[in-house]
Image (cartoon, rainbow, N blue to C red; front, side):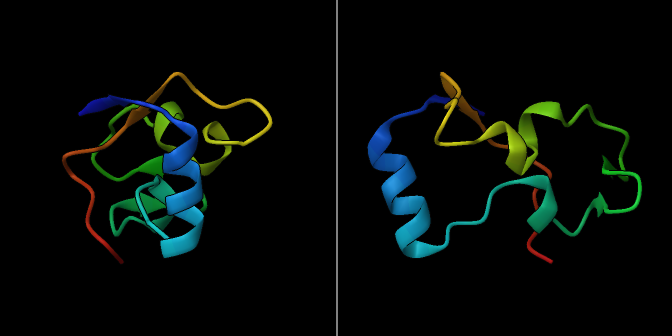
Amino acid sequence: MRVPWHTSFEVQRRQYRFCFTCEDCAHHHPEATSCVHGFPNAEHLQRHYTPEDPPSDILFCKEFELA
């Protein structure tokens, strides 16, 4: 699911410690920095969501499962 990124999301993400990236997902393979399901994950990694260069959209994975 793709939603527009907004500065208020960044504030709330930090305030509530919102988890939504691969690194927080049970299906993430940390050594390979990949999804165990083989899904492309470049837009799901934490480094994609930096305050210095914010994305235009937030991409939420339907397979996300908190680890």
